[in-house]
Image (cartoon, rainbow, N blue to C red):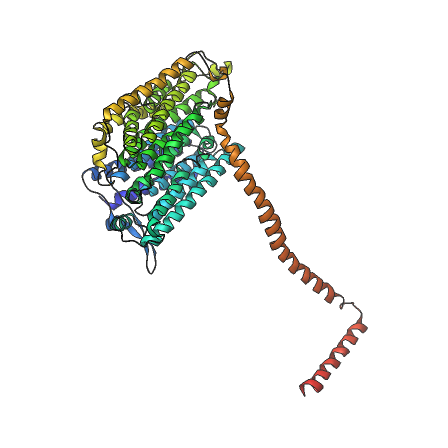
Length: 632
């Protein structure tokens, strides 16, 4: 594989960012040109990704010294390179990022039409793709961290894209700050690995870890500490308990941003990082922590989604829940299954976010599903594609989510029946809340106000065409990659990347598939029975429903017990006491001494000549006395 191919793949979105970022002022008169510059930049990366995938499939990977572009930092005992690792896992991620990313760029050309920040939007979107490519292409943890921070920055810029809205800027700051907590853990994990191995290169670390040839800086728990600290970073970036709170608020950004960053790519970075570090997690035996955090997050977020009425927030909590499934997969050692669900989720969740954007486009940016209803006849393409995505995530037989989710649940049974049971209950809840959304939005009587109803129409072709294209892999990619279950093509393709899974083959896989199918269909049937002639506004709200509707008051608890104490403590200790009292006190004291001394000396300057003569005489007398009696 040519290193030049990877450089072109990586640089292309950055060139698009520079063109739109530097010359956007002159492109404002032709916004479509700006949009297509951004889209074509990602298309070039997609073509290069396909070529890289074909090369890897033929056995030509890019690893070790062959992937080093140049030496970045060199010291007496260490060297950090700008280098790339392109193997099966990398190419899967590349195809997801550039494939889904290209379609979302095309969709955005229509969705963002007329927005004042049109060129700025595409500049940010291209910069995000560039950072995400760095994250997955890097052959060491330091380069991965550069991409990790880059996507965090772009997420902040795109969540707060409409900065005139207070809610958007608040959501951007919330995402940035919460992610800093996770990133601090990632940094500590990197420091631990460097102290133990003297390098951050994947190949060197994994080889020495298997051989036991590292410095046990924390004794026998060195790798446990390192992997758990890295997982803290994954918890923040991939919105798991307790750092999930930023993702639902991130829906303040443009809907295509939610599809690309908060469904298909950035939020899966934590899953990718753990899959890339599979050898370390296997040796440290910390996967059970990952799996339990994942399954609890999946269940917790699914319960919140049951009572949400904002179409994007339902999808946001669904994303948090599905990310939990991915962590269950990689946590129980079924790394290929976890990545399989990452791929299928990227397509069907990206599709559903874009269809939600199509609904908003038709509904004048209305988000409340209680004000919709009966949209099936007005938005036939949007309805059909949304239905495919919902069936896929619900695990409908032979659609994409059916294969990937069942693989994870089957593997979970081999690791812990309790994780399996919670995951199965979550599968029922997933099917229920997704079809609650479908029935309330697209079926029943129309609740659309007369003004909006007068101009209800299907989205333009530049928006619905990406929906149709995404609907195809949402329906079929699971079938293509999942036939054979744990012996499928995907598992064989990634066998050289991942160590042998712990419990993938426990029990009869087809029995587990049948159970999951019954559970998923049960959730759909229950949603139909409950919401075919009923809207959420008509439901009675008891104390439990109120608790769930208000997201268990987690944001309020965080604000009361974490945010406000830190804010008040900072106000008193850091500002009033330290900054104002000590720092300003020292500065003001120095100024006061100088002012007093200057004021005292000023009294000598009276402007009276006789006084000056007397002073001179006294000075001469003192000088002569000193010379005559002291010096001599």
